[in-house]
Image (cartoon, rainbow, N blue to C red; front, side, top):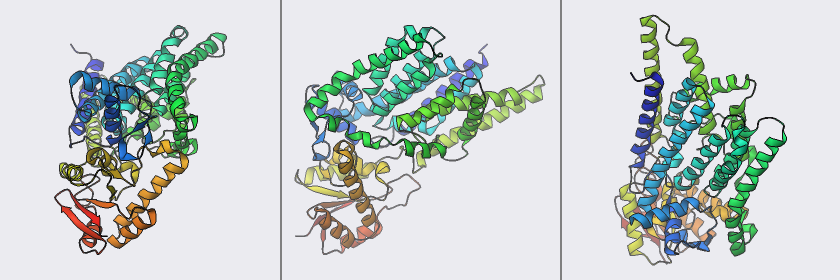
Length: 505
């Protein structure tokens, strides 16, 4: 006879696979971001696995200083299988989303009682923010960094005495996490320290110092190599995006799950947080605070880690207090309530596919076809303004355009964090200007382009929905109609996926 814990674990994993595979299979590029990652993988393969000085993404000579382990993994898989980089990135991102769910399950059963561990796994399996940033193309780096972070914390959470002997292993995993994704590396280091700490003793100090030393040894060769090519200023350029104050604000907003509606994840998480804080050693609550150090809180792939563990604690409390007793009617009622709760969380998870704040939106096949037209019908040095109606972090079309069209998008923000504070701010300002004029007219766009020094830039105005099935049927009707009648632009393509216009001399 199958034990209830085993059965519940299998159900949680099965549902977790379902909600990850469905969005990963959609669209010509998959869900969310990834254009920058695909091009960097292509660059690495073209360079024979030698780190290039710059990436060809968006034709702006962006320094190739992103932590490279995930990029190397994708490039190696592409060379072994013969698949193109886009296909490899999609497959690897999905695989990492499943692997992180498995690693989380191992961690949950190590640090929580069985019922709480099953509840935490079910929460993590269905919580949209646990996977929406991983199944996206950017999940090649996020997912690999998170996988190593989970494994590092798993080893650190071993029974008393073992973490000191495993300090080298923990340090290696922390270093590999940092070589995959910078914020995941910070989470790995902080989270491992939380669980490895066994009180004030020289043994603990030595173990923590060993972890730190090994992690540094893993990361330093890459840092030194990149610094030799670009200087330490470029290496540290993206650090300006680390803002603990913003992380605290997001943390207080309790937006951890990304659920479309009926956020039971939040309810159980808050209950678990209260219970953990009332305990003798609130390690899970400390893990939440690690999000501040990592620079990622509320609504992120890292925040799902402690929040799901806390939700498991909350679920266990409810089961123990209101679970089935000996009477058959009690067992039936408990099973019915559990089934309803599971159904609501599943629907809420699937509903995230239409949520405009998730990373699960995708570029349509028609929009991708219009980008391909650009690649075959414009000069390589042609610059484009990609119209947008959403803020840059959710603008998949602007992010994928340089990869699919192989042309420069003057207002695309992705990758500009490596240009330092001023360069990153300048790109955000350009994107904000494009967003404002997309909502206005051709005159606004022409004046903006001239003022920004891009009077020669063509316009790419996407057609159809650009931010999920609940967004307007056409993103940019006013701009499109005024461009058609404008003295500033000439329409050269007006297909199903986009309107493309070039400036009139």
